[in-house]
Length: 111
Image (cartoon, rainbow, N blue to C red):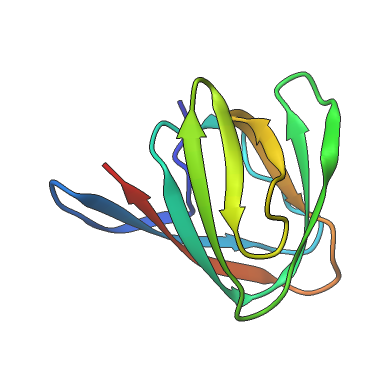
């Protein structure tokens, strides 16, 4: 399994905090989310999500300053708050910065 962020900045028995950055056109490796999580978009951009077989699952508009809460359950992720509320994607996927500016977020996984 690949890490879910660019750099792990903190971990204890309750949370894992990640710094997450993607340059324009850059994509994550395929990774699997095992914990529900939230993120704060420091520098927003549209994120195109694909499954592990390269099937396009849609593009999520992520505005700067947005806060998202996501529930991981039974191999799926559901956006439960923030822009994109109700969107569901497989817990195993990858994301690509489909914008023209760098993307940055702080992601907090709940153990």
